[in-house]
Image (cartoon, rainbow, N blue to C red; front, side):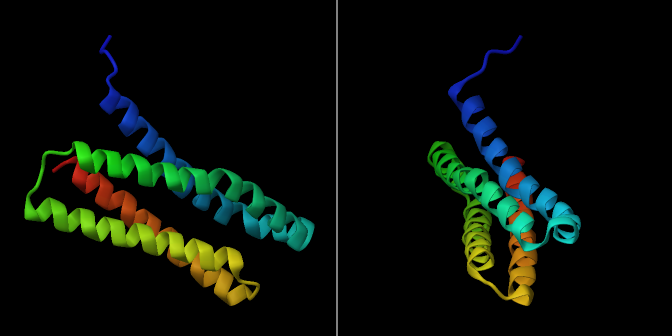
Amino acid sequence: MLSPTLDTVRVFLHVLAAAVWVGGQIVVAGVVPGLRKSSGSEGTKSLANGFARVAWPAFVLSLLTGMWSLLDNGDTSTEYSVTFGIKFLFYIAAGAAAVAHARSDKRPIIAATGAIGLVFSLIVMFLGTLLTNA
């Protein structure tokens, strides 16, 4: 069996955090329409609050492990740095969309910011995969 290293733990935690943040958004998007029909706004509010308790710590963990990865990375090429910078901008934008989504009480804003946040989060995951293969 291969021996785990501190790098293995860091990457595992980063992937786990991304899976919770992004995967959770996908699951919630799939569950909300049916939940809204069966239990109304109280059910969706309860789901949103439960998701937030798990998702925001994952969002922060992904930031911390991402910074850790950046510090441990020896690649200082312009291509890597530009890709990382773009990834980080989409990360911030995804978080901002999630905050706007959580704070709004207007259904069109909630829908738009939820969709935008998910798309931005998926872009962050794609760029992270791109950086891994650099």
